[in-house]
Image (cartoon, rainbow, N blue to C red):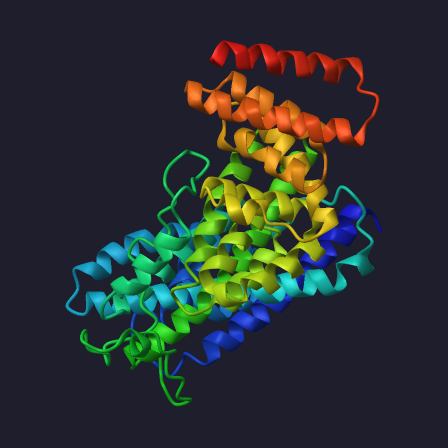
Length: 454
């Protein structure tokens, strides 16, 4: 068989797994009534209509879809994505519009997960057996509309959690924004406002005057709670949806970006920027939803190091040191640079310069050198000499202090930097009996600059 034929066989089995999962989901919904329970059947009817098979849809369009059109299950998701806005608007003017709209949103997310989770699970477990090779043909899950659909499902799920919450706990919001978010920016240079409209992890049973400890209690998890009858159960189920939906969304984006990049398509950069903006948003929104462990796992899997650093200090600050050690061991210099950038944005100079590992000392010196070269007037250019002294690199400390003194705006600052540079140079001379020409020239520059400051 050709690689294309083997790829098609793999895709067909993925779609069969998706169809079986979707059929099981619908089987559990037959006994219920309402627009949400008819969503899949209505989508099947609309699919038959748009594909020019109206004559087949008279009795049971859903049954006909599963019998004859499982290969188009990806198209069904695309159709759902395109039809949901109109359906939502129509429900908004009905007597039970709010409730029906919430249930349709919840059911649409369940349909998306029921299709994509088993399909991707089969691919990850068995795709290698088909020996498709590289580059593989474009997969059906990489359709741009499926990526858009998953983004919409995530946003809708988050909004549903917000709407179901009785009130937003201001203490939680203020604590998070004060400790983690200032200084973080999106690629478009807008403040990262992921915790705006922070969602409570509790529900209407909590009164506004309860203590914060009570307000942050996890949701109840009674086994007999029915999301179609209980707002509390619906809130809990919707919160549980967000992690799996985020995982599916990230995977589709990663696969499509990789394919576009392999084809040298200019669209890959635009899609990557979009992915980099939405990924931290949905990872961080899991924290006020009480799903921080899920956020950690996804950030690790998709190697979102800036978000991982933020999660360490937001979600589990008491164990921050242990988390940081583990991630430095796992991600090495990449994580170290991300952590140092986090400290620099917050002007946390003591934390940035406090290192207890020789390997980290080397990474910190490289980071300081890079940032000093990029911006000689940056605070780190003035403070980097402290680390040079720590690692006994007195020549680098002297040079760095001279540079900082020469660009200082205040005479007193220049005098301080140049005086310290002279001391660093003396320490260097005690290490090196023979001073090379470049350092001798540096010593001469120090003396002349100090004279000018008198």
